[in-house]
Image: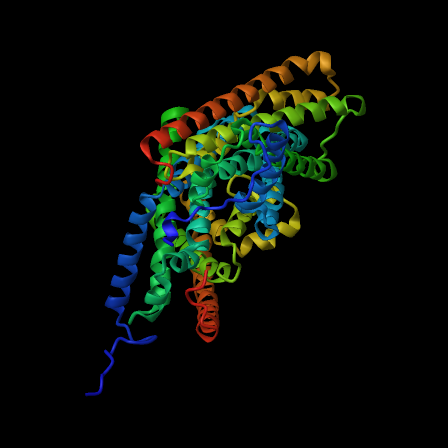
Length: 275
Length: 258
């Protein structure tokens, strides 16, 4: 008797509710996995608090002790944690699946692998965003930082836009870092430059002019702009929100191209499970 | 003839485990081998991004943040961070050099040998001190060229001595963390936590700063001595813990337990 493949096999044949359900479950599963990782707990919850404290003291040294400055520093430090979690959580995503021996199973499962990867990266990003809440609470408790928002209704949309754009960037990182055998080493190097170039604690305007076009290509720049726009600025951050979604689309398509290329290479050379 | 009862002929052992010469070999060769085999970052593909690229961007980040937020010279923050990056080698390196023995299952073999424990333990320091010095000197050179770090020529030697002592102290903290890691599931967690505590080697860092500004040994000698004392205390504590854990592991048959 000939076997007939189920209808959802292959790219593009999964229904929307199934796709959303798949992404949601992988996201939730990854958040739970990260919660039991001492390294990611340190990266997401402890490290931003230390950087926030440093930033608060440095701004105090420069006689900038206003509530707006403290909130600026808290949000920036929190976003630094989000970037670190995205970088380390997504940079090694495929490599870890290889190490754990699950990559072959996931790639050959009757679901779209890019959706599985999307869930994994969204898990890392959402986990990272929990760190922002910690830095805000830290600033309020220890430094008397006021919690204000100039556009409170826009804040959820800004956060959503930032999560989507960072998640898509995470996918691109996951698919491109796998080409480099030592993805963690690359992650070690790329933490500080993005903190700097994306203007998380130091305004981009104070950096050399040639840095600014680079910052426009980075999701953390616009994600931070969108969140700060909704909390600190006098103009609604529509442009930053739009840029987040536009960049997310670009990142996603680049990630899909990279993923197809990587999987094609791995299948052709039979290196899918090689470490 | 029964193979089990056949006499076993072992090669003759010329080395006397208690001799100074053997201890020196364990110290020197063992130290170098531990660096090459147990330090995960020793390969260029990991070393360059982690110990050259990372510190470079750390210097740039803190120089920019410090000068923007606090209004002080970027050189001040660059010099501080240039000394601090030696902790990457000292803390992570020494943690790996000790804790990876267990991870790679070589710990039982090492502890079964009659090798001099002091030589075995202290031999691991040298490569990481040299490596930490290299990383710091690179970062200082970067700071001098790009961020305005300056040293007074007459006290350059004092600054060098303060840096050497600071790197030693940092490596000793790494040794203690390495010894603690013999009992932990994830030893690098503690190393990461230590890296984030920017208060490490405060006296040494202050000595480097003052010597760079022209202070002589008479003024910073005390700070250097305190830092050296702290380093020695960490090293002794690390060795004591290592010895205790060795005895405990033998007594409880937990050498290989992860």
